[in-house]
Image (cartoon, rainbow, N blue to C red; front, side, top):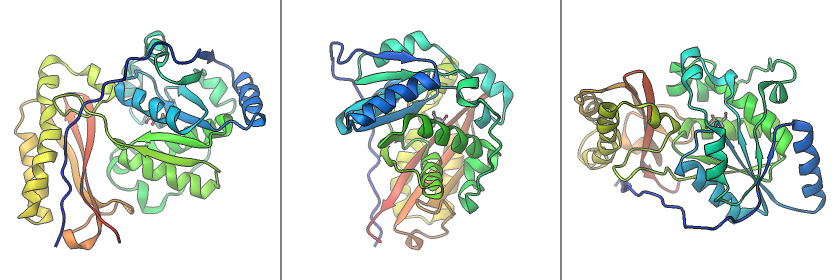
Length: 306
Ligand code: PAF
């Protein structure tokens, strides 16, 4: 008997803090390394939230969680060119450091690292990671090279920040699996903490890309989350193939949205499952174009003890 998880919507409101800590903004890697060295000497537990900026409540919730679980919170803002396989996407990626810094000043973030490309990559990073089948599917298939770039930048940032814990959102479900794999491969002494997706009140998963949506696209975008939610009910009386059909057809029926892929996969291996009893951990992952803007989301159908 399969138990399907309830897919609930919730929005996230930051508790109203006055300024929690003074936040220092650092641009240079050597300055950051010196500060980290001193903190490590003092025995502080460092929590790290890597971001590409254009922050929203999802990022802030990661910083809040990092604050609960560590002594010092470091956030980085770096739009990493090596993970963009589409130059237009890199070009239009939203950037507003001042606004981001203002938002972070209401979280426990103590060090904000905003390096240039040269600071992160003094030399070009030519490493090619081998993640086996993990990065051949879904995002890895549709955005070739993307996860190699993510692994490069996250490992480079881990080298600089030397975090005890690093916090990632579950919206980027495959990214989490890749980061965990990279950490295992390189033996990085860091705990990867995954945090639940934070949603707008209408269910849309929070994303920096949401601000690029036109009014019409934004109005239709919640169909993605709503359909994933409805698919949990649908899946109780339908097989995997029919559930895929249901999700793809429902989203594509919306005038502004076009599914790029929807796959139902094992939550650990990310390989497709063909029946609900094939795995104890089953996740549906979707990528949808709203015009030029690409949105991703996911739903956990089943998470049991194996
Ligand atoms: O998820 C993101 O914002 C980015 O992929 C990350 C992890 C900050 C690496 O650039």
